[in-house]
Image 1 (cartoon, rainbow, N blue to C red):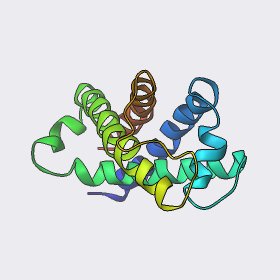
Image 2 (cartoon, helix red, strand yellow):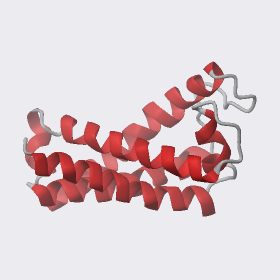
Image 3 (cartoon, one colour):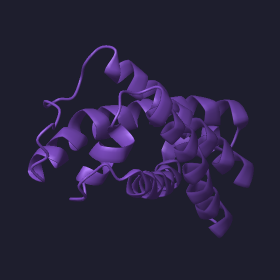
Image 4 (cartoon, helix red, strand yellow):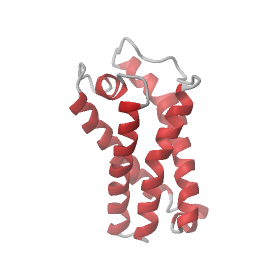
Length: 150
């Protein structure tokens, strides 16, 4: 791996998080970005700036996780090609929804005592579908940035 690939993962994750954050503000039910995300870190909301900062941080970290994941086995070559990157972006968006939004987030919010923590697992229609679309919107720019860096 090169430093360019790590930088592409961080930058792609940052850019993808902007798109997903805009969806959180204007498409998804309020107050996800300004209350729920900050609450994960014990910040009482509304705290929109803190929510954006945390969300962008998560995007960068998950971008670096993507770079690490696509180094292995059958993922390496598709991740370096545009078409393969799109497919991996969709898959990573689905994976992050299932693991983070459906499993980790409700447990984390309950652990910090957030009174409106979603049930575990956090799977509901249409919210999970919208969340999945948002995570895919996040992951496609990330995957394309990585593919362009190789």
